[in-house]
Structures are given as C-alpha cells and as structure tokens.
Image (cartoon, rainbow, N blue to C red; front, side, top):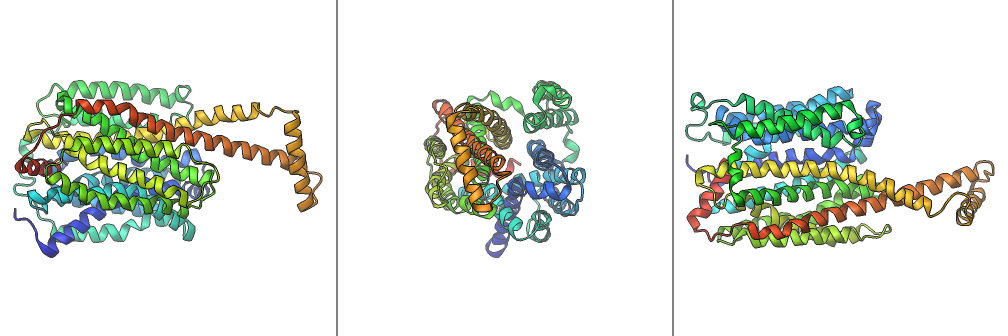
Length: 527
C-alpha cells in the first residue's frame, strides 16, 4: 500500500490525532462536572461517579481486544464502526435524563472510544515511511499526554458557560467530520479483513477477560463508597474478578490462538517494562485526578482556572514528544530517558506534597512543567522498550499488552487515590480535633472570636455561636482534605522511586536503523 503524501497525509494526521485526543478527553472531562450532573439528575455524588466508572470499565475491557477485533473485521471497518458508536453514544449521553440511562450510554461510549485510541495510532503510523515513524510516534504521544489534561479545562469552560450535556454533545460534529475523513482518505491495508476464516475467535478468553477485568475495575472504583467487603455486590464482584482473571491467565496460556498472548510476559524485559508502564499510567491519570480536586475543594480555584493551570504547563510535553521521537529514530536508547522521566515525576510529586494552602495559581506552573517533562521522557520510550528482545512477529502483542497495562495502571491509580484520600482524611480530622478538645480554652476563645465577628457583621446574636462552630468545623474539614491530598502526592512519588532500581533489569540494545523502523512499524500494527 503506497504511503500517502501531502494533503492526504495531513488529513490522516489531523483525523487520527483528533480522534485519539477526543477519546482521552472523555476520560477526564466529566471530573469537573460531577456536582452539576448529580444535581440535575437528582442523585448524590457517589452515585454520579458511575459515569466515570462505566467509561473506565469499558475502556479497560476493549483495549486488549482491539488488535484481534481489527484483524477479524478489518482495521478500517472496525475504526469506522467504533467512531460511529462513540459519536452516537455521545449524543445519547447528552440526551439522558436518568442516571441509569446515562451510565449505560457511557459504557457504550467507552467501548467505541477504546478502539479509537488504539486504532488511531495504527493508521497514523501507516501514513509515514518507516524512517519517519518515530516522528509519528511523537505526534501521537502529544495526544496521549494532552488528552487527559485538556479534559478538565474544556469541561470547566463548559460548566462555567453552559450546562453538562454539552460536554458530550461537542463530540458529535468532531465525530461526524472524522468519520467522513476516515471513509474518504484512509485506505484499507492489503488483505485487510480477508483472512477472517483463518482466525479462530477466542470466545472463552474474551468472556473471562470481560468478567475478570470488569469486576476488578468495579471493585477498585466502588469499593470505598460501598464499604468494601461489607457490601454484597463488592464481595460477589471480588470473587468473580479473582476467579475470572486466574481462569483467563490459565486458559490463554494453554490455547494456540489466544485473544491476548500472555506467554510473552515470560520475556524478562517485557515483564519489567510493564511494571514501569503500570506506574507511569498510575502517575499520569492519578495526578490529573488529584490536582483538580485539591485546586477546587481546598484552594478555591474555579473549574476553568483548574483546567488552565494544568493545560499550559502540559504544552511543554507537546513540544518535547516529537523531539524525543526524533532522538529515538537516531538510535538513542530508551532506558536512560525512562530513568530521567521517573526521577522528574517523583520530584514533581514530592514538590506538590510540600505546597502551602495559600499557594497561588502561578506557583503551580513550574511544578507542573516538571510533571510534563517527566511524562514526555516516559511514554514513548516505554512503548519502544516493550519490544526489545522480542521476535518481530511478537512486537504487536508486546506493545498491546503494554498499552493495556498503562490504562489499567491509571484505573487502579484513581481508585487507590480515592481510597487513600478517604482514609487519610479520617486520620487527619481525628488528629486535628484531638488537638483542640471540646471545652478547651483555645477552642472556646476561637469560638468567641468568630461569634463576635458574626454579631458585628449581621447583628445575629441568637445563632452566632452555632455559626462559629460550623465555621470551625468547615476549616477543620478543609485542612484535613488538604493534608490528605498532599499525602496522596507523596504516595505517587514513593511509587515512582520504588520501581527505579528495576531499571537495571531492562535490556539495552543498540539498534540499527532497520530495527528501529521495524519496531516503530510494529507499534502501528499492535492494535
């Protein structure tokens, strides 16, 4: 198949990167709209979080199966259908008037979106000659970093100026245009979709994966709000997750044509690379989750201000990604870049854990630039490192496993952060309250001071004391949350430092230009 040139290539780049960014934006855009959505639908904040959970479960299930589905149905056909599914589901999300309806369509949207992320990368790489594919990887890496960060900014702007359904409806014109451009400008690969008869569908493996990963994601996302094993649904899903995943691993290791070839994890380099990828996904998605909540709940930022604080420093990663791609195309080994990236991300995490409660918006800029640079140094090198030591025929599966682990790391990270913040909040609140016990001189003096201020402003003597206690309770709550978010940043930093010694187990191999081109081609075919 001839490589497209000029205008045709530009259209393919624009279409694929936009589709990938659109999918990634939808992983985080609702984070700043949960309060408005819960009020509009008449449910509490715990229930509305199902909107995030449903999308995450669908994404984690579909990503490892994308390579098989694209091969079975044909890549272009699968991409087009997925784009249509995503666009229609976006419209139905915006039209939903009940929580159940919204959650169902969010799940469907996640099924379509997972394919967009993976297949976009494949189509983009095929638009470039092998020697130029590291640059294409850099372009795709820009979307990989920009998408989750752009979500809170765009969502915040919409919430400040419109209403939550527009969060989903903006996907419709983008999806329609991307579908038309794909239909007219993206060519089918040679032989695409023609060996369907030779492909045996691993129905058992697919069902076990869906049951195991889906239930695991549910337990991680909902465990804290459902009180863990005190909830019957959590107990049932925990059993299904354990049985499903163990059965999935055993079954996939013992059939000839598995949906996901887990045998490759016997390669030491790939096994250790997946550990780094898991932690990188953990840090990327968790930091995007924690910072907006800290900024709005404790620091008083608006939704739009929060998004802008994240977006502007992230442009450093957008600039760096193509540069790193070019470096790797010239033979720079990925391991030193991974090491530096993890160091920088841990520095960012520990600096964030030391911020004061009166920090301003501008004070975050340089801290978040360090985060952006750290992410840039990790993402593309980890994709490349995943295939070192594998046979060329195993490149696609190795990279596909790596991508799945990154998404799973992000899902686990958000769940861990939620649970960790809740437990640390309870501990910090207890400590703060015990430092100022009821009836103590310090507490009485503080209450009297606040009450006198209320009386001076409002003249309300009757309720001044109760309002003073409420004010102190709010301040204690705010301080407890502030300390718990700092603890969460510290936890992220510890995770990144703990895996650093494992860098010595990563294989370093000097590659020829032909090997580099072959590896980058494999990235395009891994989905």
